[in-house]
Length: 356
Image (tube, rainbow, N blue to C red; front, side, top):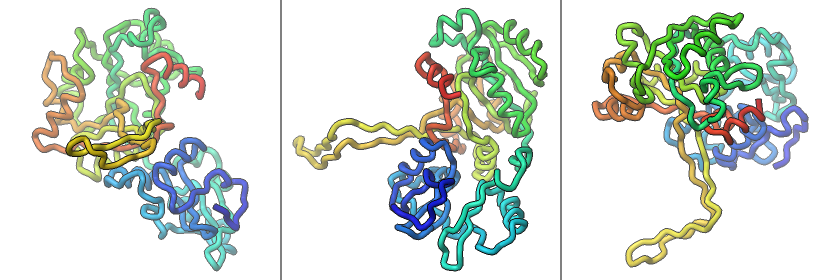
């Protein structure tokens, strides 16, 4: 693909309109960006954002669908000769990461990025949300032994903070300041560590006296939480702005929303499909399968707390099945593979700290 626009600022962000959504998603991950510039041969078409891909997945559009079928061709752009003040106002109103500048023929003449016009403190103008956050921090972290023989998994360091602080800081960044923390293993150590920090989090601890599964201890919060709330595990970091997940949850009237990660697996062999009498019906050379994987972050409506049995071992999957069985809505909000970093086992933890 060649273009008439050679600006180095976007050389790694170009994608052809005939490329698939999966190719676009992988390119975003590889370049660590959330937006690509779509071209049809040499003609600029529009911008493709991670939000466009997420909406496509939510609407059950296959990831092998060409970008051209999904990209919004009616997005607002700037034009050659337009004042910087006008472009600035347009970007503010759209909260746009960048603004393409087109000439009278629709040719891409320039790209103005947010950082070119705005101070660092102006980068987040979205309204904050104030929802409770339940942190599931009671596990023993057996897969991270021997380090968890000494410290609990939530206090395992990633960079210059613990993973617990990274998770809570992300929620505080979008306006969520009230935390409920389910604790058990080395609970006193966690309480002491958090009490010694300069930054004081608003945390109410509740004790899981015996293992109650991945959501069972939330039954102890009956009567305390009366609004929708987040639930997060303590062994992964997600770069997604959770306000997008909240918007999806509300707009789709979900009872429960699962944050999922789009994971692709390429089978390194030719795959044969067979039918009656073992006769070959199809041959696919090194096919790629895509799945949505549970990341361990959820939004739950408060009524679901009453559906969690008290004092019983109960997994989040049991709650999903229970809600579905009664006709409730369990939504899935997808994030890209690169956006989710897991530390559940040593290989994943070492990869996590290597990129942070």
